[in-house]
Length: 124
View 1 (cartoon, rainbow, N blue to C red):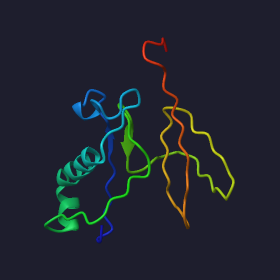
View 2: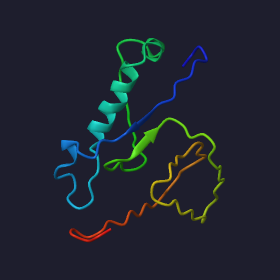
View 3: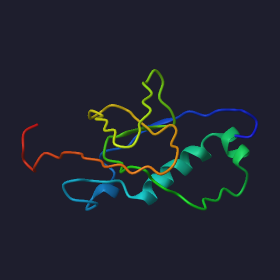
View 4: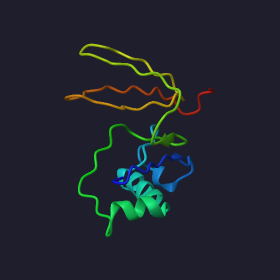
């Protein structure tokens, strides 16, 4: 925001959202339109943030960096985390349930995500 104010937020994605129905069976992903609606709703709920962004609120371009699944926790920042400066060829494994984000990206970033899913009916 222009005046130096800050805003932090977390949001857990409701695993029962109907948006997951059929999107994609066996590996549900929140549709981008739903994620954008959640972000816009959160912005609208903070008067100071809404005022700083101006009116009307227009979204010209959106790029989602990773798929969002049921029950996932999203946030605008992480406190007490570790910083890793990665270079070409580095591999980092992030265990399930560990919050993470790309804080600073210099140049192009190509990443590969693997999220193992238990077969239907399997005991976890």
